[in-house]
Structures are given as C-alpha cells and as structure tokens.
Image (cartoon, rainbow, N blue to C red; front, side):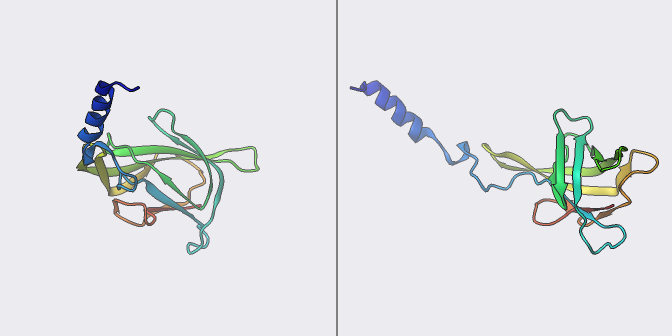
Length: 160
C-alpha cells in the first residue's frame, strides 16, 4: 500500500508544473549558419566537399568531419566573431586548409524560462576575414543573407 503522504507529494509536484517549466519541441532556438558549397568555375552549380574537417578556433570539442554540399554550423554567442579552420582532405598527400573569421552582431530575444534566449545574428561589413595566407581550397565567399535568424535557407556560399 502506498502511503497517503507519498500520493499527496506526487500530486503536488504534478499540479505545480507550469507551461514555462518545459521547453517544447519545435520551439525556435538559435539558428545555425547554413553554408552552401559551390563550384567556382560554374557558380550556378553546387559542388560537394568530401571529408572536410571543420574545427572551431577557440572552441573546445568542436571538430566535425563532413561530406556534402551544405552544412549548418553554429556561431559563437559570446563574441562578435566566430573563427573556423576548414581542412579539405583529398587524394593528394597535401592537406588544403583555410581559416576564416565570420564577423557578426548578436541580438538576444527572451523566449521563456525553460527555453531561455534565442540569438539572431547580423553579418558585419566586411563579414569575413581570411586568416590564412597563400593557396587554400576556398576561392571565394559570398554572403547570401544579411541576417541569421532561421535555418530555412543558406546564409553563405563557399566557392571551391
């Protein structure tokens, strides 16, 4: 038999929950930056990358190996820029690497107590700096959208 005090305690906990205590699935959060990879010789065509190693500079545990024609990566919400090193692995013995700094301004919107804040980013001018010198694999970078508030379409295009 379950003691009455335990039933009363359980009922009290269930009845005390409020709508803001749980962040519901589907609640929009901070969007990631969508990068589209394109062919620099034919800019209308997507060009997939294979075995691209992406490492966030100044970020712990931010290593991703990726293959495909677009990727979603986060921007740092505690700085006015985000730096990434992108290394393209190919069949040749040399690795091609480029380091980029994406410049942005951040605006936070309070959602609720459970979900916290959602960040919206606006790309600065210039919106990027190439941190590496010399020959890399990236030929050009194009800003597609000025504001990063959702993941419905691409924000940047990298031509390679």
